[in-house]
Amino acid sequence: MSGDIAPPLALLAELTHRCPLRCPYCSNPLELERASAELDQATWQRVLSEAAALGTLQVHFSGGEPLVRRDLAALVRHAGAVGLYSNLITSGVLLDRARLAELVEAGLEHVQLSFQDSDAVSADRIAGLAEAHVKKLAAAALVREAGLPLTVNAVMHRQNLERLPEMIELALKLGAGRLEVAHVQYYGWALANRRALLPTEAQLERATSVVAEARVRLKGILTIDYVVPDYYARRPKACMGGWGRQFLNVSPAGKVLPCHAAESLPGFEFPSVHAASLTEIWYRSEAFNRFRGTAWMPEPCHSCERREIDWGGCRCQAFALTGDAARTDPACALAPDRALLDRLREADAAAPAGDFIYRQIGAAPAPAGRYFLAHSP
Ligand code: SF4
Ligand code: FES
Image (cartoon, rainbow, N blue to C red; front, side):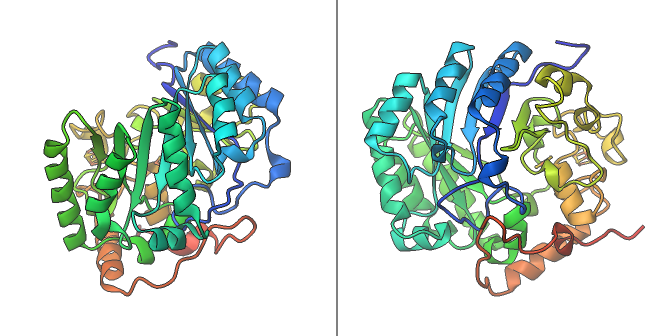
């Protein structure tokens, strides 16, 4: 603890942007890092030691697809040695019995596996990879066979929300203890694909009642996490638990970020693990302090009773929609820019879904600025 800033709960270690899948809602930035820019094993191990020294409790190994890194087991082993609980966030398509055994032996404690759909044809189309779904089913079985706890991460949107009941049944069948029903959030690739992904109000209402019924029916068997998507919310989510409050994110090239989308924000110098320790960055960097606490907030947040509940919402969404990261998140019905979000939602929900722009290294669709509407001064 330093002053009134607590240490982060978790480190999101984005080991790589390489991935065999091409999901059109990927939360990675539009400009994806190439393999040559990635931190090496020794540097990641130093980062893990620094996270533990800072007081972090958990590491989420993520990407891209973290299994493309041959040194993943060595990193998991190091995380355990310095006292971090390790979770693997994976698509599962590269997970085989030998690889899983290596990770279990290294001390891996939890696996979070993403599913694109319950229907194999649709799932493979959304992932942009043939046979992806069948490989994921096999990976889930291996994880349960190894005795590791499994969370199924179901990313839901206009093109699969009708099959939410089947997704819940799939999570049950796979032996998951937790199901995250994760509505797409519109940054990066998902923002470029918003028209193809944003659900209609009728779809959302049905999904919300499906979850409510399943939570009662499956109490004690399957925990279901569910948050209403921002574009239909009355109040925003506390993104990342508040800027610089609970999480830090290290990008494949070693940038230290308060959230996975922060590199979309202009006017920031995000520090590198090569230049300073995680402790120095967490407590003293301008980037982490810029939107920490409540002093930076504009009205109506500054005098709002929820300011220490949602921390003014998401800075990256405020920027994506208004062009100014310091404005109230338009996901809040009290935000001066709420009308922007309402107009976009109504226009997108009424339009045909259109084709996906698939995620691809070296093929960013356009500068993010193309997708936001600047607010009127
Ligand atoms: Fe949250 Fe600001 Fe909206 Fe209040 S006005 S609910 S603090 S986003
Ligand atoms: Fe960056 Fe919400 S994703 S603050």
